[in-house]
Length: 148
Length: 148
Image 1 (cartoon, helix red, strand yellow):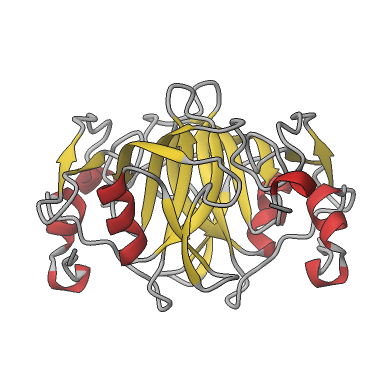
Image 2 (cartoon, each protein chain N blue to C red):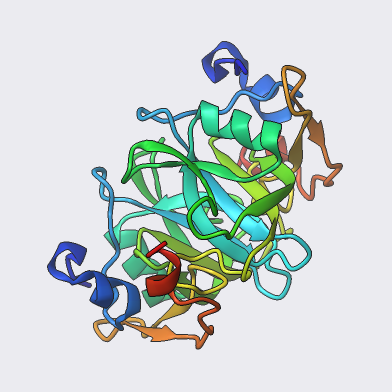
């Protein structure tokens, strides 16, 4: 799958047109935000390169680029927590993507076993800032899942 | 406001602790995803540096780092579309932030005048991929708002 280079489009074409021209950064990546279909809850944030986008659209399952492992990463290939693609969106300047998914498996997108990676809120406003756990339960035991 | 260097924390402290230690990238930025309080709808994606985080927590209004203008950017300072902070969250490895906000003004987070920047979906799966506008209305006329 070849994507149009966004630099070849006018601002109006990029922002209002029908040409999908992801604006990859210097590392060839766009930000991908994964949300749960129905609730809009943000499950995780990751990155995608051109191949990951093509693979996700072609297979119907969320596939990312793992920066730490420097390889294509089909979400759930180790944990079983596959994400079925319901809809893909992009934003005005096409440098970010939303994946609306149905989370399979235990329903945990986070490697810690929680549904969402965003299980802590920031409290306080000056000097005294701290993280507070919102109490999201662990739906699987990472020590068990990633040992396999 | 000083933030702890995440490199000084153990993986367990980073992922489960109460120390807010944003993992800034090589440019000193983390990804910020802004969602509407109540609906969880993603309004926009931007970036924050340490100063933007501190300013947002201190003022109660979403403030980002504008990469294109290379300066602190209080959302709405030109357009009037201020975003009142309801809650800030971070993810397991602390390299992304969610801002839960109440969008003021016309209710439009996007510079195109739409509520959300994600007004187009990606359709098709191979070769024939295109963007389809979801029909979100423009709540203000950018030519009018940004002329001021």
